[in-house]
Image: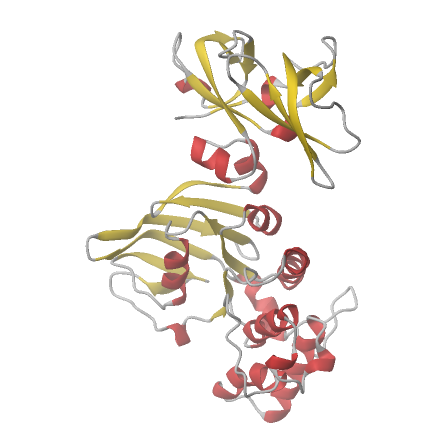
Length: 383
């Protein structure tokens, strides 16, 4: 498809952007050390064409180093990177960044302050030897795609943070890269604009079929923008999968706590119970769990389970709730956050569970309540 050809929905996209639908990314065995410090250890994943993967984890976990190795800004000690069937890095090959057919959107936007928006976008195309008319057409089309057509003659300093981020994104896709890399591109924006931009980027990525690697420390961004999430810790990928699986079936305490709010509870005197397990809480009540690391649960021993606050129903009185697991408790405090209400409920034995519901409030501080939640939403953790 050429820039002038329209897609079936009436929109158009830059010609070679559709070419990205045939690109995939394979990363295998990446290792990067700085002296005695191993920043990335045996990192690998496969990304189908047109999908987005988010690398997420705390500061220093190796996610940005991994992204920089894909971009060619860092060289791995060992490992391989293959994009669209073309080797970027292996034991014999080390392509420089400019030969990798990648685009990158930086946290700092990295726009030329002395150039207009048009010239910022045109710069890479000029370096590639495109004709003036082709550059003008390409820049105009990309600006239209991101809703910035009227800002071509402005300078970056005359734009808001969100507008600058759109320009940075436009510049990255103008050169029609096979793969687009994002290095925490929304971290400098306020909360409202950040949420708006995450959906805009995701929509654009899906509409153009661009394969993307997105680095973030924000769980909300990772969940909202990804086809896959790779959770990293201490230079390693500790769990990788679809967002719903990472959230609903975390493998370890770290993943459960890092991706979304959760209650992590110790169950004692664990015993097999049908296709799951049952165990006792510190206060003596028994609950069931049917998902997670069931096979690793020691008979008669202790295991940790994860229960998301949004999975727990709360009702006043002893007879409320119909879930597999039911606990009596007393509300200690509540917090209203707009779309959600948090309840902190004492369920005995020194254990407090956090519960979240939508307004109106289901209980008030001091109320005796029943908490109920499903066994198949109670996840046994491997550690």
